[in-house]
Length: 166
Image (tube, rainbow, N blue to C red):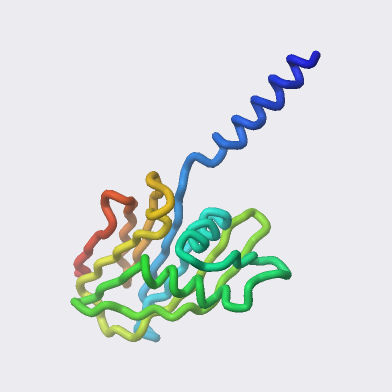
């Protein structure tokens, strides 16, 4: 009986580690013709993001709790802007942090907006989010400009992708 209990505890322990062997973020960047800005959302696994922020020197932010750090948005904006870059027609865009959404399922959504850029023709996205913490981090990017859509996966070995808009 004790062997069965120990086996069950060991199995559950191993499964809890195995459940999270994939490290992924999803970035969506859509160009808004009316505002002439890129609207960007980034979806993170919450505890992965908080771990990366702490490793980058931020205090424990307690995101989405009553104890959330008063400068949480500042730390999020700094981290994202250091690791997510858009270069459009040779100009590096500045992205302003708009806000965040934290769900009970351990996902954190961060929203940003670029400065104005008229009629983008050549777009490079460099995304190194979480790659400094997780060697197998995959950063999926969805880019939409007008009727054109692109999607690709970036990682520690391939950090950027460039597209020409027709």
